[in-house]
Length: 129
Image (cartoon, rainbow, N blue to C red):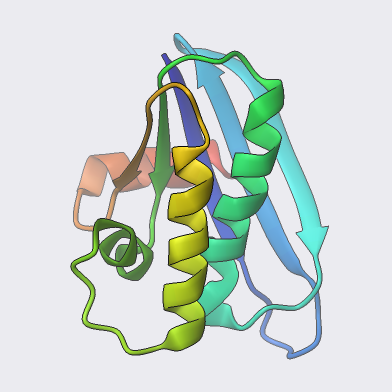
């Protein structure tokens, strides 16, 4: 099983690049640590774009059941269809992410660590590089 921890990090200054980080593990062995930059995005959309970038890159890694770990309760609700948000940009991106997830011919599950103390600490530790 593949386990991927992903984060999108915005800057305090509008117009600066966003940082995308992810760490990919297979059976506990670290296969990749990636840090890349993209053009400026609104802070509430940074995790959406980080997840889209990850899904694009995920195609070059082993094709097996994958769990993606995020720390963004709003995005998680949008992906599950339980969000009450009326933000069209966020909802369109969530829909685009769902479409990308459907393209995989193996299970790709998203797990949010919000409110899960130990899991959140692990997520944070893994992405500190």
